[in-house]
Length: 193
Image (cartoon, rainbow, N blue to C red; front, side):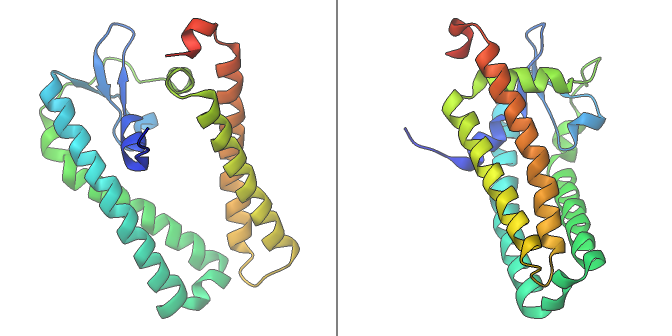
């Protein structure tokens, strides 16, 4: 089985509504209604664009972070305001790239009448992913929490990185625990989907 990390991430943005319509959850979908995908060709185009945004932005993001945080402005990591500002700027840049890439395509699509709820998202995710994948997500996120705790405990300069890591991955761990719980609570025939 070929594992494609970015395809896996991109697939999470495509869901099926209770009435059978295909939906596209754009970035920051919790704050807006999903787009209704009229046909398979549109879904394929959206998927291809999202895949490239994830691939290119992730690589550029990592390279820029390496240069900004470790070469040009290494002291930024030690300043809580600087580090958190850096994260906010990166989130804004991702939103901007996403908006520029998708605005023309999405402007012609209708929105669903209601928002896609977080409970539906969790239920669908638990149904789509295997128990092994969900457990792996949980253990990796717990590992990052431990790394964050170690950074804070050792009082390494720039421990704000440790606190941000602890906060983010603790939330991700709670999310993963809930997904594992949902997976275990599903009937056996549903788990295999």
